[in-house]
Image (tube, rainbow, N blue to C red):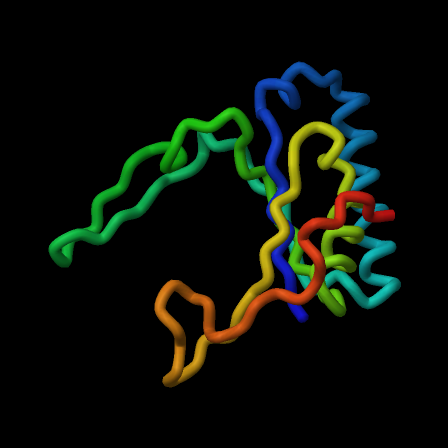
Length: 140
């Protein structure tokens, strides 16, 4: 099953890193991707530029409007994503725990769904529930 691991951190904390610290973190991310790929878990992913480069797009009354910046002000900002292949939620959580920026922020793990010509359930549930025990807290 596919899981999207959304990487969040406080951009202000990252901006205070020295160039050396930032380079070390980025090399760790590259090593993480290499390991996930070697083990058949990495599908795709990418870091994002800072939220100052974002544009929020809305369509209302057949008219596109744009706003500079992200949709909402939050403590942590979306910094990137990893699309993972995992047998269940527990494995996806364990894999997400290996993503280096988790030390500085959080990783949101969410199962993906396939779009269907028909039969898509309102709210995107598609009639399925993720497998795994959400109560587990120790993933190693």
